[in-house]
Image (cartoon, each protein chain N blue to C red):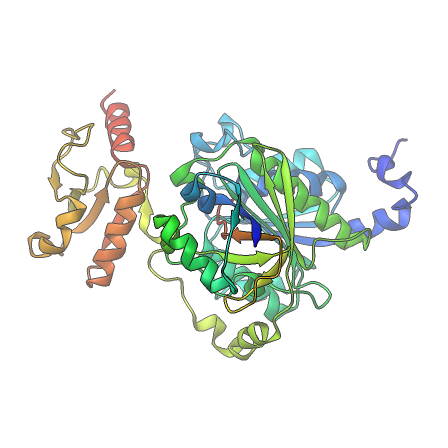
Length: 359
Length: 77
């Protein structure tokens, strides 16, 4: 009988001993999205003994352009669960655990402690800093990947006394200053490339083979196929600061601006009666939304119109693509109006959904 | 002194190029950044780190290298 892992085992650098290391390894992947899908696919195929997947989100049609574990049959399903179903078909000789919930300051430490390697495939800075800090506290290596349009970054943090993400970027950028894929778009194959590079780093760590990207940040540009590598030094002061705040870690919470808390899909709310829908686009912007009762308050005038909002009702804000509406929600929350949400994909999403509901 | 500047991600969108060579009189990184801020208006609102000859440097570091890169964080996944 040909062994499933024969092509690994016949490599003298891996052999049966190396394959046994892979079988004994436990890897947790944060996010089953663009990066998570190829990472999960390759580590499952490679036979990583325990694969954990945490993701609270559900599969949407616009994910299928790059999130290669999913198909039409996965639409509307939780990503962690849909990924597990697909991966069990790929390899049923390993243990795959789905956590269909958000990663939080409350569950991160307990979860990370059960794994050997943590992999970041998340899509927002807040989660990325949470993952980094939890890895420092639990002393777990972190395989990092992040993408922007046609460019990607890969690194290994917190490994063999190497630097952490905070040694590179000490603090998160201001909310909303760096758009993510759902806001600005991404070349579908890019997370495939970056995620595969992360899978490669995971296997090198498990096998203790070759040289990892610890202490280096690799940049890849899909448009010119250029890579650049930058050296990062460990900054003990930054790491000690995280460690000294360890006792406060589980008491922390996400700030309100995190996408999982404020961005909603119109489908979830359109049937509700006690809501106000606010169009914060400028009056000339098209398409007009006349299918629903909508109040027009351009973002530029929002601060003067706060009194006109009925704060007894939930407020749903939309713009053209979901970026300005997020800013508006941020602003409203700062003004103490907490029951407000941003409609993820803006006016077009509303029009599309109304159309579907009508037919 | 002639240096090569490299831009990534959102930074390259502001400068509308990925690379350029310029002659500078600046002695430290902060002076170079002032120059770039006046040249590229949108740069001021961006977060980035600076690397000189592939090593991260702070704003008070002396300019000694031939290649200086502006590196923004990416969040997408």
